[in-house]
Image (cartoon, rainbow, N blue to C red; front, side):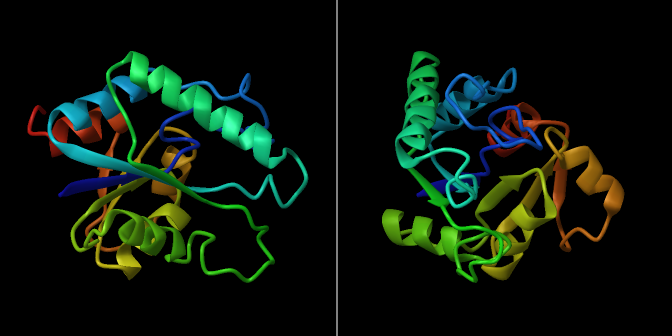
Length: 179
């Protein structure tokens, strides 16, 4: 299986420091849904790993998160794409769980759900906390400069061998050999 793992906010959809709290606020980054469909056409299985501490913070409930994901899946299907699994951490930053990035728990959940080996799998994110779990499990950290990505790149201290792209579409073009 050719697997690729994506962060959600700032990679697939526009991010907000005030959190994405409703389906109306969930707006895809131009080209991101087409890029995921391109991955599918190239034979990739696509998974999503996302911190969703807005649940623990009381900013939205489980039904609202599911509605956001339903919107994503519907819009993606309209472009001819699909995701195999969406794994998310519902905990707050002080809950001490192993699934909140930068911990690798979400990646382990994806590996388990898809019976996949994570070694060398591209993990695409826009923040250091997206890249650290990739490094921890032997996956390939990939930074996109959308969302918080430009600030993350400017701050430095990226995991060794991090690949950097302007956006998801550019990263996908590279991984599918269409760059």
